[in-house]
Amino acid sequence: MPEISVIIPVYNVEKYLERCLNSLVAQTFLNFEVIIVDDGSTDESGKICDSFAKIDPRFQVFHTSNNGVSNARNYAIKKSSGTYLAFLDSDDYIEPDMLARLYQCSALHPEIGCVICSAIAESEDGTPLKIMNEKLPVQKALLFDNYSEVMLVQPAMWNKLFVREIVERFSIRFSPSLSIAEDLDFFLAYLPHCRYFVYEGDAPLYHYIQRNSSAMRSQDPEKNQSVSLAFSHIQDYYKSNNLWEKYYHEIEYLAIFHLYIAASVRIILVDSKHQLLQEICAFMRNSFPDYNRNPYLNLLGRNKRLVFFLLRHKMYKLIRLIFKLKNL
Image 1 (cartoon, helix red, strand yellow):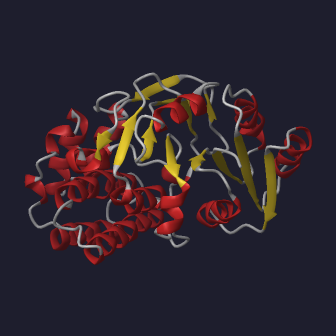
Image 2: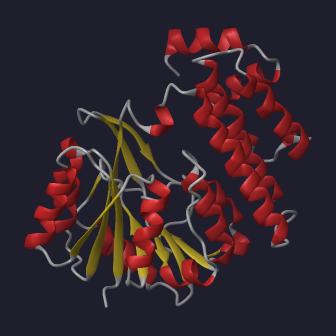
């Protein structure tokens, strides 16, 4: 049985796919399997996946009709057999020692539920844009009850190691109804069942490629309704598990960051009069009536604090102007 199952949903990424898969072939840690779900690709992606499976028995490829990234990941989880789950986006790539270093951290305590590493964001031409570090103690087993701020880390799936037994025991899956923010939904459903976690360190092990065509950079304002839906899911989940009051401020901050600021800005840059802006404001008022007093607001950078102020005063035209002038 492999120690790690690496899950990769694939859809029309022929330009990036070989680099992604070669970064797995180059891993210094050897005891892993790769579960690739070709989600109905219409380019050469499926053939590229099959070519890797022919020469490396650790690669398993499943071809499905196009059902979206959440269904593809859920299908891969069902097919996986590793002790741990890792997720890799098919247009990204990883350092040769990433799996080895995450696995090494998982041995720091018998109840480690999640290992987190740093990442670097890059443009499509390879230009480094931003190193994504976390303000957490390095390579120590941290008790979740004492470090609830781990909920505020980058919520993506791709820089983490998860325990498959926890995922299965609590039936944690990706929601097919979410076109974006499905990672956030999954991560926050998983985290309360994680007794200990480890932050591997500040050296980036994951290369995240910022593509202009990605879902999060879509020019369709309606996609951002998915973020509101994700927070509705999260709210219901935490209330039903008697966790809402305990982690209220952390979830409130995440809603400020990902919904009130990030989603609102994406909408404003396309249509500053879109109805979704009113719906987001209503959701924040109803779910988090004192969100402007959140204790984590000091974590917002200077630019986001400015946007937060302008949003509260509905100065949407000024936000559009600022983003055009400064490209915040």
